[in-house]
Length: 340
Ligand code: PEP
Ligand code: MN
Image (cartoon, rainbow, N blue to C red; front, top):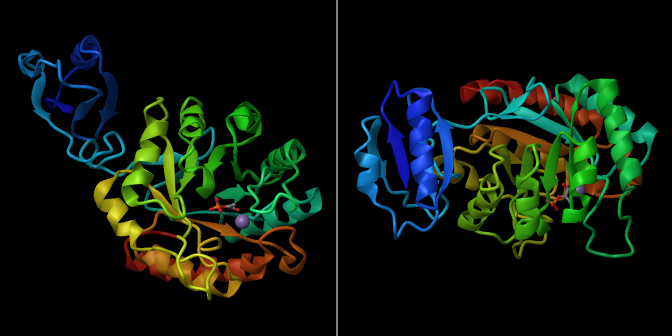
């Protein structure tokens, strides 16, 4: 349920309500909006006496949360959430500006990473993506450079100022990845790994959560809920395509999730047109479509030598294509009231 505070409620009023929530054995999430503060009370409400809240003068009303997800839902917070992607919150995802995070699928070497990082920065990206731990279908495929890859990402951040977004695959990698990354990426295969979601929820890093390739919207938002419930409200959703019977694409990019998420949740959503199609030639068109349908940004694979990329070369655009694409996004963003 949501306890809606009256406009002008004081910090002490909010603390009083938070204490009541705790007294009933529920978990509190205080959400400060532009015109009012609400306290979401999550947990088993069978023994909750609502009149205890209603009797308190600073409480305006109690509203049940109907959606299965609670703190991720729009019922709890109607304004969009802005998620900072770097320590100083210089760049956010979810604001007027379309946030583009770009870089190679995998970190391969210092030269490779720095060349791509400088190129995407110059073209207007705000974050650098790159996998150091790669979830590969085939155990004999390149698995990523591990900690060495993380060190290179940190070097690239130093050199460019870009925020580093990189995948964490297991709970035992969380501390290590946190040492180097600005944003923790949870991959499509791990969206249902509830213990990993919780472990990332206990960190102070924003989390980029990819939708499972066969997960429903409810399952996606419930996965986000696992992270938020641990105290980390900085969740960025990412659609990366779903499995279908199509063969001309690697995945089917389900852009219709964007308006649906916008209706259901306050969390920002990015589109990954690279995993989402599997083909570099489709990436510019689907990026434009993503911005047009209301996505808050993109996660794009860029490689200076796609033919020799160790992973996902076929879906990686070159720096030149990326630069052109970033230009082409500008009028589309403007047409939907955004900026690119
Ligand atoms: C990736 O971003 O390179 C990746 C492995 O993504 P996903 O988890 O969406 O397959
Ligand atoms: Mn990839």
